[in-house]
Image 1 (cartoon, rainbow, N blue to C red):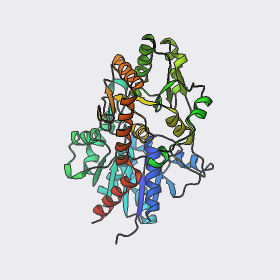
Image 2: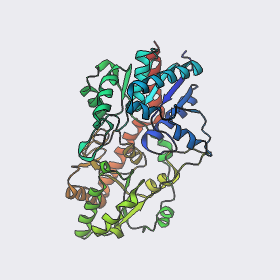
Image 3: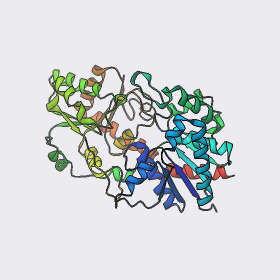
Image 4: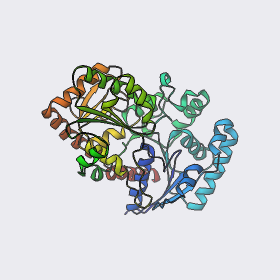
Length: 401
C-alpha cells in the first residue's frame, strides 16, 4: 500500500490571482489533500500576505524569503545561495517527500540548482507559460532576456522530470535538449462537475443587458497581446457589415475594458460586452472558477478564442466542459486541445474573415453546434482534475523509487 506523502508545491504565482496557473495549483493541492497527502504550497511573499486578509485555505501556504527571486535575477550567484539555504531549511522543517514545482523560471531553476548542488531531493517541474514559451513579436516570454534564457537552458534539462502540459510545451523541452526519459506528459484539468451544471441562463443575460434572442460568443482571459482580441472584434465587425446584428461578443478578463475604444472604432460597441471583473471566490468557499465566470459560460452559445499562443488553453477545456461549441485559432496551446472539425473549428490567428465565417457558420447551423457540443463534452472528460492528480501521484511514487 502506498504511503501518504508530504508534497512541496513551490510556485512563482498563486492565489488570490485567478489565472490558469493559480487555479490549477489550487485544484492539485485540494485533491492531493483529499487523497490523504499533505500539500504545502510555497509562494512569493506578496501572494502569501494577500491570502492572510480573510482567506482560509484548507492546506498550508508558506512564503519564500522576500525579494529572493529579484535577487536571483540581478545577482544569480547570491540569489542561488539564499534560495539553496532556504530550500534546505524548508526540507528539514517539513521533511518533504517530493517537490512538485510550478513554473520553470524562476522557481524551477532555483529548485533544480538546490537539488543538484545541495541535496538530491526527488522533484518535478511543470512549466506553465512565459517561463518556457517565447513570442518576440509581442514581447512575450521571460526567456527573451538572454540572462534568463541562459539559466533556463542550463538548469531545466537537469530536472528529475519535466511535465509537459501540452505537445507544444513538449517541443519546447526538446528544443532545450532535454532527454526524452526526463519528460512526461500530464495535462491541466478542469472541475467537470462544476462547469457542467446548468444555471439560470436568462437571469444572467438580463443582468448584463443581453437579449434572450442574441447569439452570444464568449471569450475569457486577461487582455494581453497574445490573446489577440483585436481579431475577434474585427470578425464581429465583418459579421455586422454582412448584415448580422443579433449577436453579442462577450470578452471577460482583467483589462478587458481597455478594448472599448477598439470596439467603438470598429463600429461594434453595441454588439460588444467587456467584463473587467469575472468574480473572486469567497474565502470560505474557494470555488474555482468563480460563480460569475461559470454563469458567463452558462449564458453563452459558443466560445470564440482568438489566441496567438497558449501554454495550455484551460479556458478552452472549461468551455468544452460547459457544453459550448468552440471556435479558436490554429496556434500553440489551442491546437493541442482542439481537433479541427471534431471538438471545434480552427482558423488562422491572422484571418479575421476566416474567423467571421466560422462564427457565422456556428451561429446559423444548429446541427453543427450539436455535433461540436457533444464532441467537446466527451473530450473534456479527459481533463478531469481527479484523473490528472492520479497521474501526478503515480509520478511521485515513481520518483521515490
